[in-house]
Amino acid sequence: MLVNGKPLKSVNQLYNKRKAKYQSHLKGNRKSSRKIEALSYHRNRFVENYLHNTSFLVALVFNHK
Image 1 (cartoon, rainbow, N blue to C red):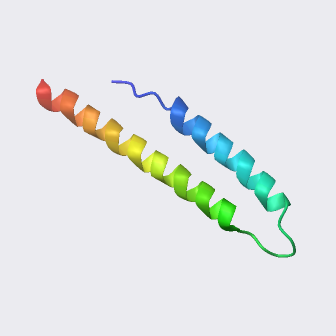
Image 2 (spheres, helix red, strand yellow):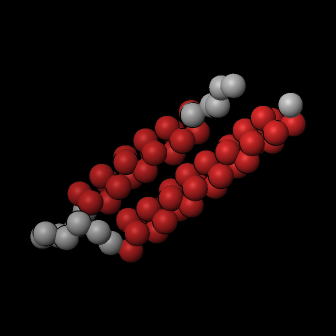
């Protein structure tokens, strides 16, 4: 069974791009901001949801047979 990983890769790529953009606007030694925290929160929620749903579908397929 193959699982498509493109959605995870594209979300992570966009996350890295936007995080780099937001970090470039930060002053001094700061590494985070509210925008970066929100971006991380949404990315993490998407990844957790995608992995949970994928593992659920894999379990359904293998338990059904």
